[in-house]
Image: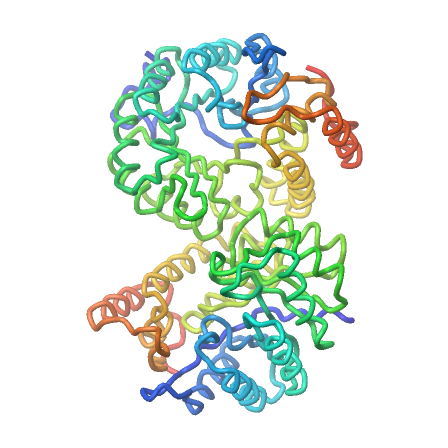
Length: 321
Length: 304
């Protein structure tokens, strides 16, 4: 049983949770050995790096961590490394989204057993699910755990993603007392505002977390933070962006957001291949990428290094672990 | 070229008679309403003015009528989009001759051209006149080519007169990429909201807006605009939520939603032109009732 729930066993754990989600939260990559096996010691180093560099929460294994390419056993073992390494310094979120809903339930049970603080789910994906199918899937997973639950809104184009409309969010808030927030990857003013408007009226404190650091446009609309794309490269920049937002220092926030956007443009091709490639230049190598994604070539790594120098990242961000 | 900053731009609807012809008497009232209720400029006929349902001759006549009626009281931005490059170019030249203050165009509907072809289309339209040129995102992004930051940057490098991007895509990443990289090419390049979601647009560096809902709630649009102009984004949050709710209500009415909401505010201006259908009586009544019940509309002007 989670200590979170031991302290707050009421019928509304979402309202009673002892942590507040805000800031640029870090979602580590999964370090791999050269033989493509998971480097759990490297994962611990990665997680510890993020916590020491100001991450207000840690979330793993997002797609950036190659979660679709990890086995369930690897995901469970990695989750255990995460919880043990973080050691309650900040909240830990475990992503339990998978192709099979049964696997998601298994991962959710495991996350609760190891004392994670919350879980993030998107299910069932890669099926063009209807709103009704998403509702039932999330209710099944959310009812299966006592942990606070975040959902992952990922509306790809042409209806191929998993989209949480405001109507669906409202139904889930009514149905699940432990539904505390959403990772939003709509990156869209109208969609974001509609969810924010409805969810925050129904459940004040509902946490809407941007999927990447496209935080500037969403912050005045109610976003509480983001799950980071480039924190492994530039944690100082991430923290500076959020501090500027909190201070309503829009000029500084724009400067930071523009720079982060340039970084993301470097990384988005075959994401997270170039991200891992750029980590080499920062003295934090995290190994290759599992197929079908390509590992960054030597030429690509050199190109990324030159770009990081041009953006003045190399000299302004921590080097090494 | 000195930057043309249009501010809060109202986008009038086009009223039609029951015989489907343009109702110019009513159009004059529509224009007058916008002029009296805070329009810094007008853009016409945009999507809300049912531009694609007008013939080329009607588009030209409508612009000439509007310019004559407005008579220089505010700048008029002529929307010249067309699937055919030559037609759009001809319409742009007509707008300049007629006295428009600027032109606006989005990528061509219907075709699915490659990005280089879209850029060329926009460059030809922009270079057809010396007027400030506003590049617009297509309202229906899947009906042609989605405008990318790379296309906009390409056009910026090739033209002298791009004044800004009017963004109705509402995509955060596109907005930030375009304004941040666009200003490295043209420091005076503007990002305008192409919808009434002004806060996310302005906070990333935008200024100004083409406001469709100014036909319904011009005071609310002005309040949000003023907050954004003063960088008071957190203070604008509640107002932006109200506007988002109104947007959601109107959107549910489809193409007839905006005119139905206007009728609820005492400004009936006919039905959409065919093939756009009006709402059925029950749906129209429901939407009108919901609009009338919005507390934030109580201070908005009723009637003309």
